[in-house]
Image 1 (cartoon, helix red, strand yellow):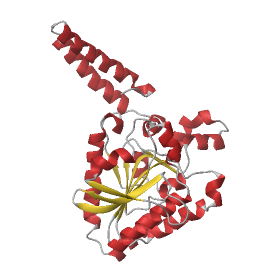
Image 2: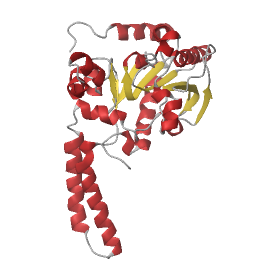
Image 3: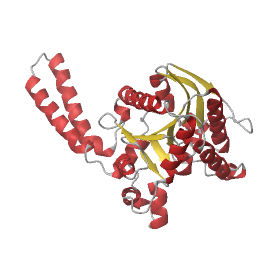
Image 4: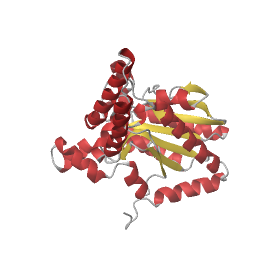
Amino acid sequence: MESLLDFEKPVADLEAMIEKLKKLSVEQKGDFTEQITQLEKKLIEQKKTVYENLSPWHIVQIARFKERPLLQDFIPLICSDFVELHGDRHFSDDHAMVGGFATIGDTKVMLIGNNKGKSIKENVDRNFGQAKPDGYRKALRLMKLAERYGLPVVTLVDTQGAFPGIEGEERGQHEAIARNLLEMARLQVPIVSVVTGEGGSGGAIGVAVGDVVMMFQYSIYSVISPEGCAAILWRDGKEAPKAAEALKLTAPDLLRLGVIDEIIPEPAGGAHRNPQQAAASLKEAVLRHLKKLSTLPAKKLVDKRFEKFSAMGQFGRE
């Protein structure tokens, strides 16, 4: 990798030492087997120490890491085909929200997700994955199309939130998200939603009202960003690590609170260290739940979805 997170430095230093010894053993034809073995054992222990004791703020950093795989990376890894559909039929084709017909395994689905960029140009074009009303209306159009053809919907969530500017408000940002919540709640086909990176505020839940909601191990899901929360509560964005702790935005916290249904494991250190392995885990989890949901009649599906979201936030839940 070209870059590292601050807390990964001890792991990176050991990996560099191992690579250096392996290179020396080839160039100088020396026997460094014992030293390499010892360092590899130490590396395993160091990874365990670092990655099993991550703070919520560390997980926020992993979820936002620039090398973390995006929707455009997952599509070829989990889909045998993908036909992108464009436009909301009202105003524009929002590039921050991508969707279309796809085949995952042997299952045909409507795949929809937030799409950030890998370069400055892509990020600007896709508005850093922050959809405008046009994006949410496009997503809803595709969901209704999926309902018409009896296809399940799979959504991959990765956004800081909906576009917050005046342009979005002028075109009805709040109404577009609220409409999605209503229509997803009563959609007559299965919906599986996965937070793959950052799930922020209404911008995330606008495509995440699922029969099953899952999160990657090092993703985050919250009503507000840690920086935004810190600015409101402490009038200081530097208190973001404290806010991350208080928000309970990590996958284990949200599983315990009943907000999500399952945690999808990632390679040690995050999906960016092995995107193929992360994609394989994602594909397996999605297909497993789609198989279960496909056996439910439409009415029972909708009733269970309503009960699921109605139960969230009940008094006394830890």
